[in-house]
Image 1 (tube, one colour):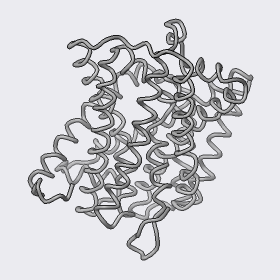
Image 2 (cartoon, rainbow, N blue to C red):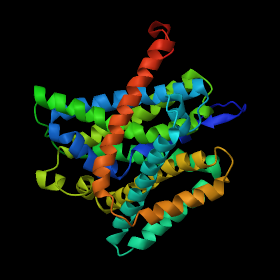
Image 3 (cartoon, rainbow, N blue to C red):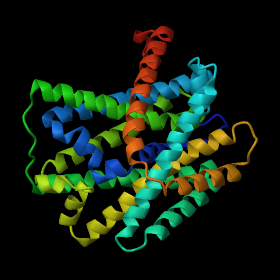
Image 4 (cartoon, one colour):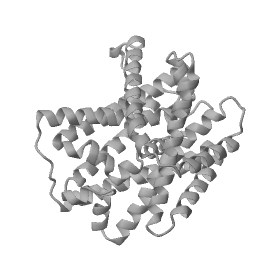
Length: 353
């Protein structure tokens, strides 16, 4: 699937969609942990939160692409500058650290996944090597891998959830005014948190789209797939008894019920979700390091991966609980500013978005 690019060729729309989806579906999503904490505990009110998340991600990703296209922005540094941060250094360093930390968490997760078989270090290092190999191949190689890996993860989650829903009863608590408000609040934070990581990738790929229709197609297709997986998996988790939800990998109970083949596929998808998240973060970081031509793409990729592997040996759990919600709140402010920018620059009735 291709769409026009400025160079007269085509852009791999499915590859860009896969890169975005891979960046959002990390270990927390694929394991079911995030869905349980953010949505399921609010009952049917959490389903309202899911709808809020999908709507905000669709609108937010589209607005980011529009803003970057209008200003010629190709990295997250450009976003900071465009929003009036005259001293972008502290903001850029902080955001870069968050992306690196996200990489480190994914690599540590890969090591934990391999620990069950006594292969903790091989999993960590092999994942790092695979990241470096794909990154070194450049944007075409990155999109080539993302083209099939990202959609495969999303579609597998949809099929797995649908299979569970066919054979089990949905057990979601009734609506209450409080649960709806809490669920929508959680959806707002969850969308902001994920958009916070995604803006780096969106800025890096914005130049691939030359028309507003292309940007809209990307926003709708990618978030429709994400939203379907999010909604169905949340409903599927509601069919599990409480003791199966109070574990590190709630979705593992659903996969185990499907038999050994499905269970093995799920373990691969869980690893792939961490790999693709780290790949998306690394792509944005490498692109930023090479923006001024001081480092080559391959040297930048090497430093990003080595630093990520090194940091993966440090415990980040307490820091994540503080930094990630703060990132979500910061991006919420950023999102509101984008809406205000769009309101001022385009008449709402002219159909441009």
